[in-house]
View 1: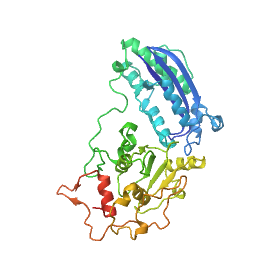
View 2: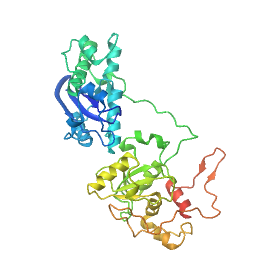
View 3: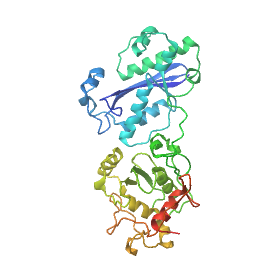
View 4: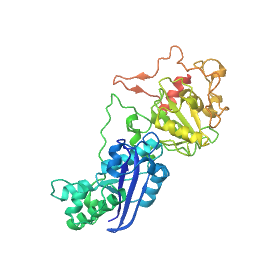
Length: 391
């Protein structure tokens, strides 16, 4: 039996405010390695509340020189070496890992969480199942509760003690499924968006694994301005769903990420106006945008696009081969393949005007069920043709 017991402490009531982690690695039923360290909580959720300080004793001044979450997350997964995570009340610890990662704007590697509290509740008939109560019942050594390293070791010891008591030999025997591994409900057809490749709506994008996102087309035109670039979308686009936009850039050879990272080259900002022309000054509304500002301030080259510029550049080098009618005004406003936004700037065209639908354009046909009848080709291409008046 092999797994990594993990425990987090938080600075305040926000789950993303992680300030400490404890780890205990179990290999073949034995604790072989342990580690713990303080963490500087992500920006925006980094204040310390008296209640939390009273529980674990960690103060703001204690984490001034501590590792940040991005560094800590990488260290956690190196320590676990691909193994399963087990936590006492895993719903809490899993949500801390997820929320801190969201607040930092980085990608969360694929992982599985199992709950030692549920295991104890299923095997031990006790009036309450707090970690220290269970440890006492199992005659385990005393420990300092709410010290992350000590809690992780106690969690691992509880799991191993129950395994010996119940003669269980593996994770699969102890838990039938990892935390949260449930069948997803079919989305309500009245509200669900249908991106390229399946029934996934905007609200479920955050729960997708990295491998589930549209992957770059290696056979795409290498001259396209998006080829080989890394994209992050924030806000809600008006012309596409989030995953439709991801499919569009992937078709051009770009890589999608759910958060802003050191590899991000394009940040696309969605606003209520599809003709919005974004600039660096627009950043700061979401956690992703604040993370982008931090990277730009650190010297990273990154281009900020609004929906208008994004749709223009999406036509890429093919634009000169397409016959564009008049929805964007005169020829100076039409998308061009030549200008590519300057890194660390906005890419805002000087004469940008909101795109409009050609007069008399009836839009997409709708059948009796209320769903759009789409011509052949991906939905993002159909939308581009509609907006730019292409045939």
